[in-house]
Image 1: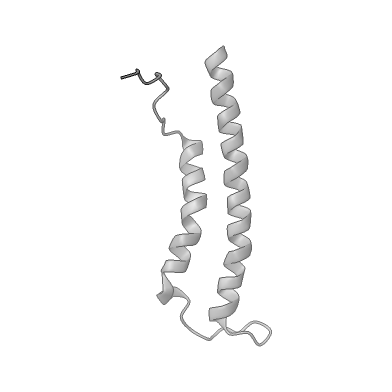
Image 2: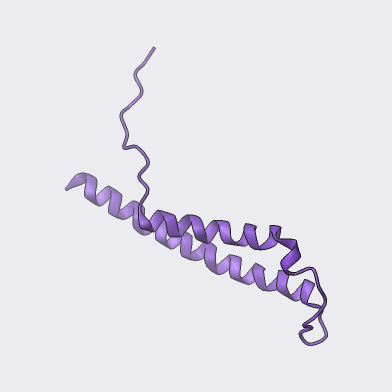
Length: 84
């Protein structure tokens, strides 16, 4: 059986914790239905239930972009640190 190449074990860093929080926050917000299962306050005639969910679409997009950029920076730093 061939040997598996030795790689660096996963490391928990503050950056990776922020990445995880950015990706988990939208799920928690949407799964906590009791926090938004109401009609008031309405926004331009749209019940809270609907505009809250649509707002999270935008927030999720921004959080995913932040997580992606942080991940790219983390990977560059990890590769840079390995060769130094």
